[in-house]
Image (spheres, rainbow, N blue to C red):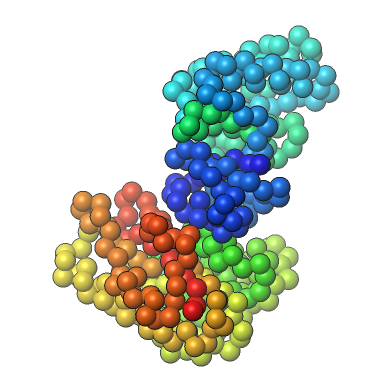
Length: 384
Ligand SMILES: C[S@@+](CC[C@H](N)C(=O)[O-])C[C@H]1O[C@@H](n2cnc3c(N)ncnc32)[C@H](O)[C@@H]1O
């Protein structure tokens, strides 16, 4: 059994885990952490979790002082005969204690171990929980001697202790985002971790993923990396060229065997030449805004996006096998009061021949930064 520490938009991280492991296997512990019941947990393929760990202990209704004593007792015994130097980070989530209290646990453990001549390097706590960068750069959870304890206080008062199996590989994600040969700030590229989330939300085990709005090719790159075949189309010849160069780069860099087809096509009218197993796309999002647009402007941008995306959904419908999944990022605009304006088509999906997945029906899955007006709304659809 595992704990997953969720990223910035927890609902999306939970939906991703539910798509991979089944809804029943994922139970929320607190706002930012969930328990995942599975034997095999593939942390590296996730985009919506910052860290994960294997649960080693659960205490009922315990406070930090008691948990701290247990940690010191257990690990001083476990490591007292260790031949290796141990690096330790302790991250506490949901406790009302200071970072110094957390650090103190490590200091006591270090002094106990010293008596047994075991050397412990303690990662200093600047915050109660180490951020992803600290865990990643110290390689915590990636080898038996580099340990991070994830200590989570659940909403019901129980405390779970997990040994980390790794933190999000932010260096590799940044390299794929920024170091690839072709980028285009105007097109508004999809963050690679959101592409991973969307691919995982499709629930596809293997096969070919189509992105009919492929742009610079982020979905294609991440699909290839996760072991799928990639198929991209776009209206713009420049984007076709960019996707071709970028997918060539990723195939060479990571020695990927998966196949890749990229062709020119208007998603509203195109007839796709290859079989399609899932559709994953960041569709046309309209122009970027730095402040909420006027109602008239909002209405015209929204109508235009709605036209393109609903025409695409109608065009591709007869070309997909029944039950094919589509995971689409579509625009939703935030107004001055923080409310979202959604595209009209979100109310018309059933009549267009698509059902919405239960992973997203309870609440809209929205991905945005606080300073963004245009959010990405993630739709998970199934062709009826
Ligand atoms: C938001 S961008 C996608 C960016 C892409 N996810 C990436 O990471 O680079 C939308 C893309 O849709 C394309 N597009 C707009 N209208 C289209 C249409 N009718 N058919 C196909 N592509 C279209 C644009 O050329 C642009 O590349």
